[in-house]
Length: 116
Length: 113
Image (cartoon, rainbow over all chains, first blue to last red; front, side, top):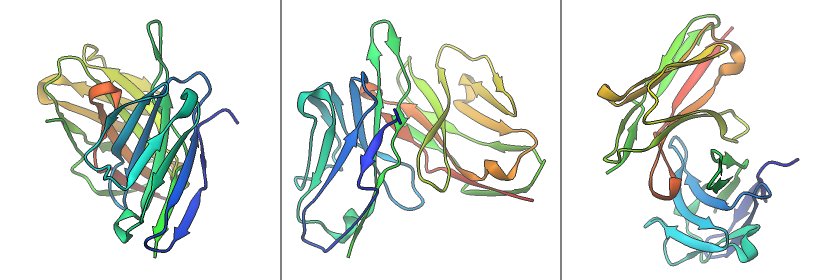
C-alpha cells in the first residue's frame, strides 16, 4: 500500500497519560500536515512540515502537543498529560510541492483517540 | 479571515435522485484552491476535485459535477442519479497559507434504496 499510513488506528488512554501517534506519508511527498477532527466537524489544521522543518503551528496546538518529522520522512505527534477534550480523530496528510510537480493532499485513515 | 460554510448539515435522498451540496467560501487571497473531499464511514478523506481560483469552468466527472462561481464565492457539488455508495460526509475546503486546508463542517449525505 503506497498511501498515507497512520498508526495506531485507535487509542484509548486514561486522562493524564501521554500518547504518541505515527504518520508515514507517501514517499517523495515533501509536505506533511496534521489535522484534528471532532465529531460532526470538519478537520482543523494543527501543524505543517516542509521536509523536516515545522513551518506552522495552529493556536489549537497547546504546549502539551509536540510534533516532529526527523529526516523529513515519517512524523510523530505526541500529546502529553491527555485531557478528555483531546478525544478526536487525528488525521495526517501529505502532498508534493516542487517547482514542476504539485499534488493535492492525500489523507491517512486517522488515529481515533479516546481519553477516559 | 478564511472560512468555508456548508450550510446543509444533512441531506437525505432516495437512490437515483440528483443532489446538490452547497459550499460558500471567504478569502482575501487572489490565488487559492478549492477542494471537495468525501469521507466514508471508514474515516479516510478521499480527494474528489481541486479547482484553482482562475479557472471558473464547470467540471463533470461521471455522475459528479462542480459549479464554481467566483462572483458568489460558491463551489457547489452535484451528484446525478445518486447511489447508496455515495452515502458519506462531504467536505468542501479552501487553501490557506502553506496550502493547509480550511474545511467546512461537512454535509452528511444519506442515499436510501
